[in-house]
Image 1 (tube, helix red, strand yellow):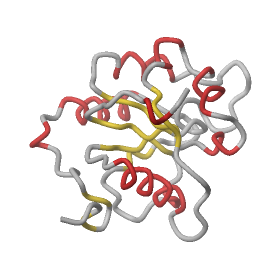
Image 2 (cartoon, rainbow, N blue to C red; image 1 turned 180 degrees about the vertical axis):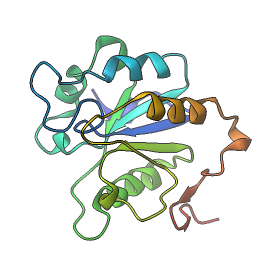
Image 3 (cartoon, rainbow, N blue to C red; image 1 turned 135 degrees about the vertical axis):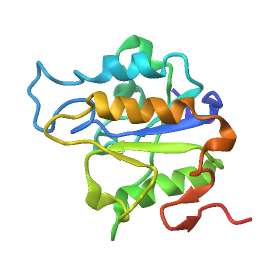
Image 4 (cartoon, rainbow, N blue to C red; image 1 turned 60 degrees about the horizontal axis):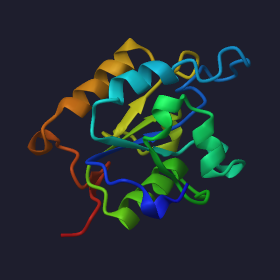
Length: 165
């Protein structure tokens, strides 16, 4: 799988695994237990998925993609880059990806509030003990249903403009 040949999507979902697609500390039977409902939600949306999970430090993109249900695999169009050191590491890893690829409509499913600036509007925070639940899927569904002009998050980060005008 090559990120340079990834399809162009109008929206990008940055996806964590632990605490999102399954409860943090899940056993083998629970791994990726929430991937099916997420796949069902985005199946008809113009939305690609970029893996922002720490699993990317140990597995290549092809291996990460194969962990997901077959119907979901075609949505995966990349993974974020090297580990950022300092405050809000995952936020910086994601915004570097966003800036490099000129992405304007993006959202994050993650369970680590400390990896993002306070008030980050792009973050949909999951309870790490549960992962995705109906409330989270409802919020994501609302974001997917927004018309392009309705999204207040366009080309913004948590604290102001992301892409200079």
